[in-house]
Length: 95
Image 1: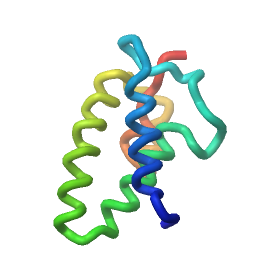
Image 2: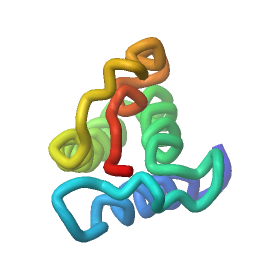
Image 3: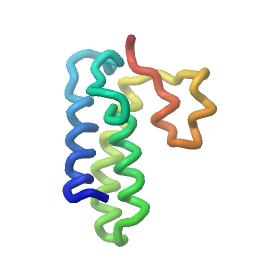
């Protein structure tokens, strides 16, 4: 991973969750490859490779953000084939 990659992914994921409103806005995307789902991918990758203590610490932060992300998105049945990438890819943001 790049230096500070976890910090950048946390900032991107948390920044998306700071959007006002009940649902996350799908039109707020920086560019392909760096959307909130991509940040969540980076965090998952890091958690799989960190030592146990660091994994637990990061996992606590990510779990809190995952709960908020799930609360502010809706299931999208047409994206179910993307579930193997991560459950967060099967969620729909407001369009």
